[in-house]
Image 1 (cartoon, rainbow, N blue to C red):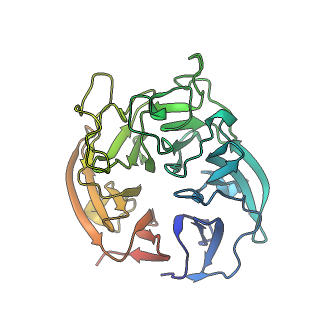
Image 2: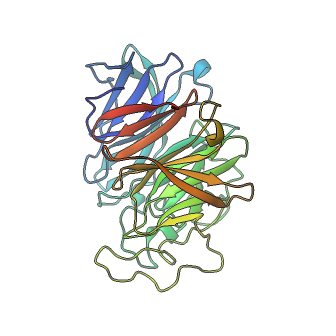
Length: 338
């Protein structure tokens, strides 16, 4: 469908059919009539390009048609290091206007590492905004930031669409805790999507060497990293001798060896018939899309590879019943039924 992007990370489709695509180095690109426009969008915030940092997810407000808000996640650099920030802005004459920062961690939460920023964004039916930040690449010890409620790293967060903190977040009244936290113990969230018609939030996250996960995200829950994991250190040494512990959630799927899991989306519409409602899981290293069947009790009952090869897959969406796949190497393909 489109080629010529550079290190593409995420995409969102405007009501008029144009597609916005983030490039990790910091460019926001526009695709119109299957053509990549030559000029990037102006006024995009400067990003920290080190390691896995850069311009990350892009998402539209559910009421975009009436308010025009576009949300961007990116790695923000400061003198203390960098961390994941979120802004919202409007698009006018190929430039961002009305920029507002809606999430910036406390300065003490910025770290020097260049890994595990997350970050995917999604909205629930009440327009609350959810997003994930990775553990920032800390060592896999019990002191890892993912287990600390006084730090934003290794968490799924929940805020209002304008950045305010919801009063019913689970740790709002916990002394010292970051009030935006929704869940913790998440190593590096790479996919985040609400299941249509259910209100259920699903997340994919990178494990270390092994232990990539699909999780059902529950308010206030601890997903265990690095106390429990199905993975091992990249060196081959063990991280922990347990994969389960009371009070910590189990993944719906763990992929071992790792597939380098990435973005997810649910099949909507009737074009793909029996696939409607199934979850599509993309992967980077294994370069594939997996169709996942989830039953009424939230259990995974089937997995099937429906696409493989061609590059590292960074994002996936089902729009108007068709499946759009974004490759990090710079192309978008569109899948339709045979």
